[in-house]
Image (cartoon, rainbow over all chains, first blue to last red; front, side, top):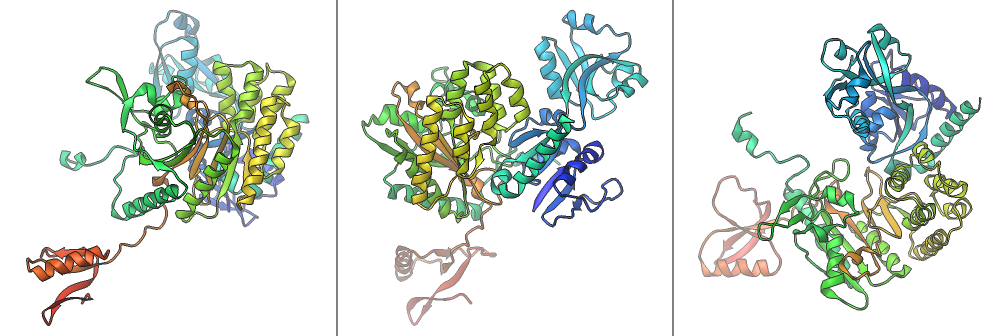
Length: 216
Length: 385
């Protein structure tokens, strides 16, 4: 049995065509089904639906053999015990620093004063500001980061931005680009070795499909 | 929860070994040490604490971070609780034993890690392993791999996938690229994670030949065909050719012993101190390798006496998913000072029987299936009523 861990929403939608290329079709749609384990047309392949930030954990512990996880999630997780052989070039966005419109970010950073930063991505934020030589107090939040500067909880936020619509709607502006984010295929190390004959064809098909897309 | 309830809770990833598991672990430990002695290995018992300078080198940041430290109140120097026994055994070989020829040493004991090593691992692994010092030849590696297989076989693990890599490939290519420090570390980490996108990003400044070589490594895994394709894909540096020749020769030697190895040429994971062949054994049902090892020819250097070295080790506690062996049944004997009874109990124990004296406390859990009773003036063993 090959178990693939996916999260609902964008990653699931954009992984479907890759699975289809490998001859794998889910029997149910996780958006309408409440099942957490979803069978496929192949008896030896099943999908499990988990939170995006839990995908690396399931794969690391061998509860899933493969998974699709955003680079943002992998950077926070640290990647221990995982192989991440392929950039799937899906669920693309940018990790950015944003502040309230009118906030003097450049000035705040230059002064050498401490900056209060609200984010879900504490690991990435810590490293980014350390590289800039800026002291920060990190405030860990689990969602709606955009609110933090508006109510005076933080000076800046570090968050994923795809269209910029949410920032705009909340009178925030992106002031710094930290890195491009896209989703990676992650593989449990022991599974790649022990189930090589079944996992390698899936990786090969995914690789070929991603390459064909890029050439288009 | 009140204070008293909390006091006996252990730290995270630290646990007791209870009787069932202890029977399994201790049984395996004894049988593995017996196996090692059949191959001529001598056991050493290094200390739990020693100065940090001898526990790890300055370059070995990973081992440094894994080591609990304390200050020696006698000297004011920093000591560490060992996180790995291998460097201790290397120290013993280099400076204490000072043998000129080959030394075969083995060990078994607890080590302590600041952070758990693998997923769901204990922070107090029970490390057991064997090392050969003083032989740079392939024969030593073959013996160690064979011993690793035999050890796992004692634990009932016969369906093994043995994976072999060679640090020499990375070392030769990193040397040729002139990279050092963080740039080299970045490539090392990307290779360990088979992270091709990061590998592409961190090799942009290299010559086309070297870059292609680094990018090919993560895909060099599988059966014997890997060695053939690696010769085409990797740059023909002397170090690379030497490493591939060693892998070819090792494969041939292992096949004679009924072992068909697999190869993963990006597998550098064993430890930072490895310099040549590295190997790991995987088995279904385990999310991590069950045993690891490799060649670490330069470890003795910091003790002033470089000696070629190869060895393997495993964590006995990682094997505790195995079925626990049943408790051996004993004989329940009455308490008493009658000379014939005392003599009879001693004789039975000399014969290897478990004899448990009934202390008369209600709720006996001694696990006996027989009983010592007096019939016609003689003490006899009868089935438990």
